[in-house]
Length: 81
Image 1 (cartoon, rainbow, N blue to C red):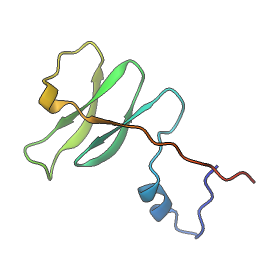
Image 2: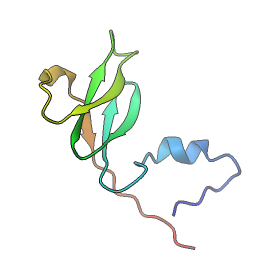
Image 3: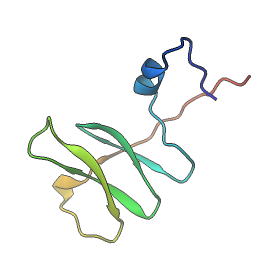
């Protein structure tokens, strides 16, 4: 469990993004980090690099390679109480 060092945990959440549960894959789009289920893939949508947002679509749905989000691999060490 990650323990915030202050009453405001926004910094921890922003600096150490994680998915809400096991079996989810984290992706990155210019709009930020997002997670998709195992049977989905992350895509980006938007009109320019400022407004790109993440979107999960079924894994078998055709998507142009230019619209695929970057897969993120984070390994975090959690502090135990």
